Every structure is written in structure tokens, then in C-alpha cells.
Image 1 (cartoon, rainbow, N blue to C red):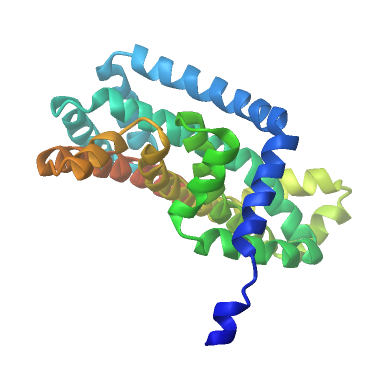
Image 2: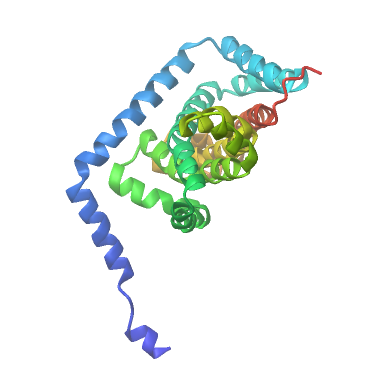
Length: 282
């Protein structure tokens, strides 16, 4: 025991030095990385807040009806206005904008990475421990390097959310493509299809249900993370929850929590139905 007290690996010092070096040498890069995220987020949030609340409710209910049937559409039409009635509408739209931006970035980055992992066993083997680490690291740990590299704010919250939530869509995209019947792929090549055509016209359509399952998981993780990201200055429905906790205001925490639950259920039911291919209105 004395040996461990006297001889320690200075991992903490190495970590601080690494972050300081990144912040000093690549600060312009990290600031530039924030620009497209801020552009998407700010414009989407502005648009959602500009729309009348009844238009948003009708649009969400319409999506629910199209993909999940009339029961989910009815629930959406009844439950979503509750967020407005309890004074949480603007924060709900901010959270929806953050989640949508995060999921969009996860799809744009995660699907191509998943495709590469499906096509290369070597790349997949190198990627697996990285994804394992990303899914096991405690949520709050993601906030530390993000704050140090990108400062605080809603954009930084989105970046932390993307880092935390991207793993499922990468994994399930790779899994879905690998599960496509090899005979179907070989038949497509036999008919003269190019690798690009095989990917877009054969593998991706057949893997779509698995990919959508990954999208659903990514969305749920993103929703949980944007709430926690309030700690680093992100907006949205995490604000009343954190304020309720800090000020011991149980009512405020309950209101924020209820609004989060309603939004989560609506988004979860719609994306689950999209993944299952349920267009039934029964």
C-alpha cells in the first residue's frame, strides 16, 4: 500500500497537459467546429419558436399519424399542449431544436462510419473499443473536455450530446449492413451493379429497420444528454430541473420532468414506428 502512495502514474497531469496543448494549438479549429453547429441550432430554434404552438402540435400529430397510427397521434395532440399549459413551451422547443440538431449530426457522421465498419473488419475492430468506451464513460465526464475546448453554452451542449449519443447509430448501421444476405449482394453484383449502387439500392434499404433502431436509441440518448448539458450552460428543459435541484423547489423540478417525459414519449413512439415500418392507422 505504501508503494502505491509513493509511486503514482501522473495521469491527471498528463490529461491537463494534453487538454492545454489542444486548446493552445487547435483553438481556431475548435471555434470553427462550433460554427456549423451554431448555424443549424440557432436557425432551427428560431424557426420552432416562430411557429405558432398549434402548428407544431399539428405537425407532430401528423407525423405520429403517418408513421405510428391514430393512437399515438391522439396522444401527441393531447399530451404535447400540456407542455404549453404548464409554461414549458419555449423550453420544449429549445430542447427539440437541440435534440434534432444533435441527431442530425449523429446521422451525418455515424451512418458513414457504420458503413465503413461493416465493410472493413479491421476498421470495425479498431472502432469497437472506442465505442465501448464512449458508451461506458459516465455522462458527466463528457462535459469536462467539452467545456475546456469549446467553452460553455448551448452549442457546447450539443457537441457533448453528439459525442455521447453517436455510438448506437454507428453500431446498428454496421450490424444492419452485415446482416444483409450475401446472396442478395452477390446477385446485385452479378447484374452489373456498382459498389455504390449495391450500398444505396440493396444494402441500405434492407438494413433500414436496424439503422432506424439505432436512430431511436441515439435520439433517446441525445434527449437525456441535452438535459444534463444544462450544467454547462445549455438551454432547454434541463433549466427548471437543475434550478429545482439547486433551490430545493420540488414543484419546479416536477414541471420540468413532466415536460421532458412528454417530449421523450412522443419522439420515442414516432421513431420506433418509423423503424418498424408501421404506417398503419389502425
